[in-house]
Structures are given as structure tokens and as C-alpha cells.
Image 1 (cartoon, rainbow, N blue to C red):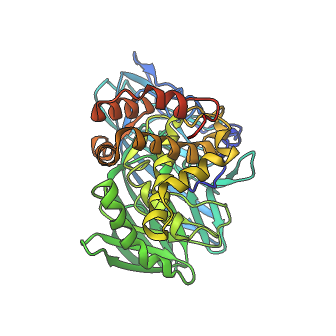
Image 2 (image 1 turned 135 degrees about the vertical axis):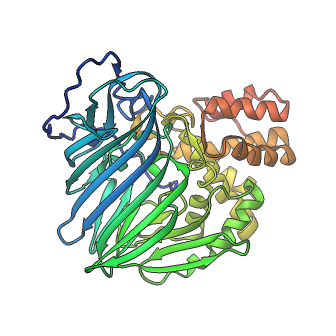
Amino acid sequence: MDQRTPARALAALLLATGLTTGCAGGGGGVHGEPGAAGLRDPYFPRLGNGGYDVRHYALTLGYDPAADRLDGTAEITARATRTLSAFNLDLAGLTVTGATVDGTPAAVHRAGNELTLRPDGDLEQGATFRAVIRYSGTPRAVTGSDGTREGWIRTRDGAVALGQPTGSMTWFPGNHHPSDKATYTVTVTVPDGVEAVSNGELRQRRSVNGRTTFVWRSTEPMASYLATLAVGRYAVTSSRTPSGLPVYSAARGATPLLARVAELLEWEEEYFGPYPFSSTGAIVDPTVQVGYALETQNRPVYTKGTLTPEFVVHELAHQWYGNSVSPRSWRDMWLNEGFATYAEWLYAEDYQGVPVRRSFERAYARDDNWAFPPALPPTADHISDDPVYGGGAMVLHKVRQAVGDDTFFGVVRGWAARHRHGNASTDDFTRYVEEESGRDLTEVWDTWLYGGERPPEP
């Protein structure tokens, strides 16, 4: 996400209410235990669910922009990590009309954003199962305490779905915590003349009886907060980078900067290593007024006022740091934003003649960057505040000064390769840096990553 984005509290979602649906299925003879309703994230303890690991989401959606109605079927393939008598999914607002587990009707219960499915029998530990949930209604945006919005954002002829940190639960049920990544197939039917753009690659487009269906496939694992869907009258462009990587973008209005996506991506590969996904591109919609851009996987979303070179560099850097290497919990946000902000500093040096040292000095001088340690935001409302961005980038620069350029950039590339398409924590990072550099960096971590005050800077 762009460094100027304030955090968006989960409170609005947690206060949302849901309707209890009818029940089906007997559930007799079960001896397992219910999965946990929440993964005890330090900032969002009710987010995500325990007892299973999602492998694939197959979302089949029909959206009518005129009526703002979404009809959906979510087919979720998962593996039970313990014997389950029931399990939970996160879903906000929409009405569930029925569910099955392995083809048999399941009892369904709603309590706020918690959707509980109770299958007809136990799901044995280690077993793969398939849950199908049918739902519909009017998806909604969620407004945080600071006035920023996420979730399903309506536009004049469609909508854009923005998920960080919790908004994806407003348009599909899932295990909505970044630690449970999965592959996706998103099939979307909309009126003819309207585009539907999601993550991954467009595998099929077909029109029948005045409606067009788009099939998108993401073969690399993705955290659900990075999933997106943009529906509207966009101009679509397709091309390839010099190395052959597909570039697919959808935009409203004149967007000459999109021609630089391939150039900037290949420039970032020189620093960060091979690009971790099978396509790239952008969604540009200046009618969306949310105040931030978002690093949605493969295809970042740029909203009003955010299509600038710095934003593009920032969101592309997230494809390595945040998207491929995703946070283990929301406490690890500085790893996402510190790397993306440091990419802006590298861009300023290579393209604008501003040394990284000067960018560091400017960040050091800003009082806002010292409100709290980068690795210890005080509450969920602060996970996207300045210390996570500018403070996180300063941590990286102090590492660079401590270990030297060759080792530092080896660490930068190696970190992205070591945890490619996985999750990692702050402890994983500090341990990795010390192992690769052979240096004890306790002073750097204590002072710059966890320290509560601005240190004297020579």
C-alpha cells in the first residue's frame, strides 16, 4: 500500500451483523472439535480461522452494476489440520442461502462476520475437503475510524474490491488472514460492454445473451487481502515486457505512465531478483476516491491521484515484499512497507539523482516517523502509519550500513528467494540477516526496529 495511507480499523467489520440461515444436515456421530474462530493475530484476533488450510478458492460470481447485486458461489478446497466437527469462515454482510461439504448439505450459522459450517460428519485430520457456499446481496464498503474505505467500493458503472487489511470478506467467504495463502479461480459474469478484471491471467472470455463471462486464474499462492475484482467500462491493453512477461492493464482515461510498468519492473528485478509472478499490469480508476493505491497481486490498483512513478515503484516492489513473501501476522507489516519505501529511495537515486542517504536523512528528520517502533504499532489503527513505512525503510538502510552494499543486496534478493510464495515474520528476517551477514546486529534491531526514541544520528 502507498506510504501515505492511514490504517483502517477492523472495528467496523467486527460490528457488522449477519443473519442466521436455515440449517440442513444432521451432524450426528461427530467426535471432532470445532475449528477456532480466529487465529489470535496480535492486531486482529478474530480474523482468519483455525483447523484447516485453504488450498484453492473457486469463486463464481454474477454482478449487476445497475442493481449493485452480487450473486456468488464459493467453492473452497482445504485440508483439515485437525479432526473437525465444524469450521468457520469470515464473511461480512452478504446473505448465505446454503452450503455443502463434500457434496452433502451442511448446517450453517451466522454470528456477525463468523460463518460456521457443520458438516454431516467429522473431517478427519489430514483430509482434503470441499466446501461450497452460496451467497448473495449488496456488497459494501467499510469505513474505518479515520474515514478511509476498503471492501467493495462502488463506481459509476461498477465496483472495485480493495482488501487490505480485512475488506475481502465483504465479497467472498474465506479464511481471511495473510498466513493462509491459496490459489484462485475467479469467474465473473457481467453485462456486455463492461470489463471484469481480477488477479492472475485471463483464461477465458465469452459472451452469451447480452452477458460476458471472464475467467481469471491465479496459479501462485495469494493472501486474500491481495485479491481484487474491478468491474467497469475500462480500456484494456495487453502487451509483454522485453523478457516476454504478459502485461494486462485496465484503465479509465489517459494513462501514459502505464507504458513504464515494464521498464520499472525490470529495473526492480536488478535489485530484488526474478519477478515472482507469471504476469503483471495495473488497474487504474481515478473515480475511486480512497486516498491510496493497493498492491493487489499481479495487478496493483491505482485510485484518484496515485498514478505516479513513486506509487508504481512502491506497489511493484510489494510483488516481492508483501505479496510473494507475505507477513506471518499483521505485526510484520513493516517488512512489506519498509521494503517498498526503500524501493522508492532507490528509484529517487537512480532516476532523480537523490542519494539514498538523503532520503534516509529526510525520513530521520520527520517527527511522524518516530511515533512508535516500526515493528511495534500500538494498535490495529496504526499498522499503516508513518513509522511502518519511513521507519521500516530506515531499518533497512541501517542494515545496509552495517553489513555493506554487497552483503545487503545479497540479503535483499536472498530473502525474497528464501520465502518465495510463503510467509515470514520479523524474527525470521532478523535471524536471516544475521546468518547471511555473519554479523550480530542486536544494536540495529534494538535501536531502529524496536527502539522507542529517535537515536542520535551522526
